[in-house]
Amino acid sequence: MCLFPSFLVRHLLLLISAIVHKHKVCTGSIGAEYVLMQSSYMGGLLLVDLTKGSTKMLPPSRDWIEYFIGGSGYASRALYEIVDFAAAPLSPNAPLIFMSGPLTGTGAPCSGRGVFCGRSPLTGFWGESNLGGHLGAELKSAGLDGIIIIGRSPSPCVLVVSDGHAEIEPAQAVWGLETADAQAELKKQFGRSEIACIGPAGENIVRFSGIVHRERIAARCGLGATMGHKRLKAIVVWGNRPVELHNPEAFMDLIRTESRRLQNENKTLSDEGTPMYVDRAMLHNDMPVKYFQLPEFDVSNLNSHALSSFITGSTACHACPIACGKRLSVPDRALEGCAAPEFQTIAAFGTGLLLSDIRDVSHLNHMCNQLGLDTISTGSTIAFATYLSSQGVADFDLEWGEIGKIQAAIEAIAHRTGIGVELAEGAQKLGMKYDSEEDTLHVKGMEVPNHDPRAFAGMAVAYAVASRGASHTEADAYAVDMDVEFPELGIVAGDRLSDSKRGVMTARIQDVRAFYDSLILCHFATFSSEVLVKMLEYATGISLSPQQVLEYGSRAVTMKRLFNLRCGLTPEADRLPPRLLQPLKGGLTGGFVPDLARQVHEYYEYRGWDFCSGRPTSDTLESLKLDAFKE
Image 1 (tube, rainbow, N blue to C red):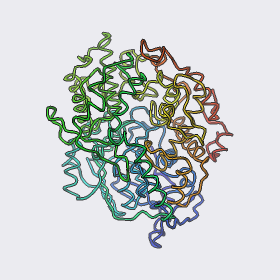
Image 2 (cartoon, one colour):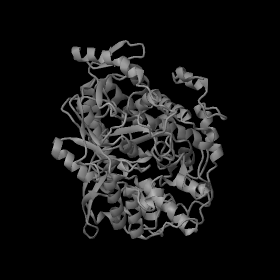
Image 3 (cartoon, rainbow, N blue to C red):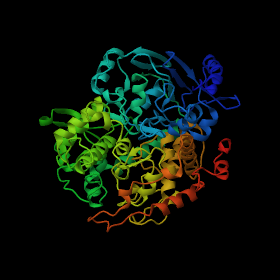
Image 4 (cartoon, rainbow, N blue to C red):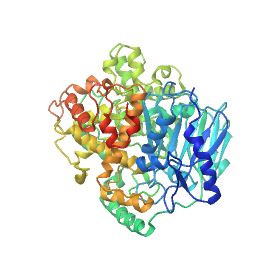
């Protein structure tokens, strides 16, 4: 049984003192009081116990802020402390954390994000899912840096947070509703607010269900299933508290300059959204076709030009000068003012399942948003089931390019009916059941996203070692090779079809992204390391050198590795599916196959991880000030 976290109890008295003195407080592990005067930290964490129906306000740990900053970095340290690793990921006391970062709500460009973290119901390992929109900023306005949710409600409920207050309300009126209807009903009940909710997929504990805010979704890792298991339909947040800055004048001068620069440098992304990459991806053989079996597919009716006929406007996350989100209307698919599909979704349902009409992909995207499903895992799992059917291994009544059957499969998954009973468990379990594990495209249990390591070599080690399983955002090596560089940190573009230095380069970009995810910032925002640390200093007073971006990122990556080791991870899990280590027939990559063993060896060596156990060495832990985790 998971005991109530002792460190949370220990800090409660200090919080009461802070409220009395009207200060924002953090505490160190030795209990020393630290008052954050003029800082963008709000100084409050909300602890929610759904079993008891109780809520408590707690201060964050000073040490954890000092070494992990916020976002998923801070969450990794907190979860290591409070997770019962002997229990199942969907045990009643399995914690779910929603965190902001020190830049959230400050107006820093592209800072309108938050992150859900917990043990993934899909993989059993580290779970992390980033969310755009306005929820993170609203959480700060409500006086909180984060929410820690434990326990399981006896009946469906909604967590309502407003200006330092929290209540657990009944959710019978919205349980069973799709995400748009649920959010609309909750806004009628509670008024102006920002909402994160699950759809029927989360309620039915689909292992790759997500958490939806507006039409944005924290999609990967299946944390919607965690909410569903807790019978938590939604989190409703509103507030009016200002987010303070350590040096307001310097901060505002800097972000004005950076906002203008980002707006000028991202005009194509602003105009077209992520579908801008469709044509280039196909040119590079970086857009998987037919479950990664073919190199090419006609995308003339799937690209941004095809989509542009239906676009009605743009949407932006909080404080975003780019506005890459698009809205569309497709009358003959009954879509009006809906979110347009992103690149990953176009690849998952379009080229991945051999659908060639952007209208069909848009319809499936809308279905997944309303049902609360990760489009990457949904598309990949359906593609795998279609592959098994085509090989005569199973009979799921699925065919490539058959929109009606794909649509029916999505509904079945979300409601766990028919073939959805099996598919809702994810591709890994499907492969195990049908003795087809070698053909299953997953890493550590999470379905592979839609970038091909045979097109960008660095994605091989990026997928293999990622904390949460196959992830294209933990280390976007493909973007580095398309000139998203940090030269001052030794991160520069190389030959995309070469293994040279891929282990080191991927580790460095992984560290940078872990730093981004601690602040929290959108990865589309191309800041130099100097600007990153200046924004942090002007917001909080925490002063770092540009080179320390790698140090702090590495600490977060290492903490997540330690978490996974406690979950039972071994080095054998740092692998790729066999299919991705076989040459593509045709295409423009010349049959290139990444040398994964070489890349992983170089990565381990750079990280200071033991080759036999996969564990960070004592020297590595000491250098990262993680001495407490030495064996």
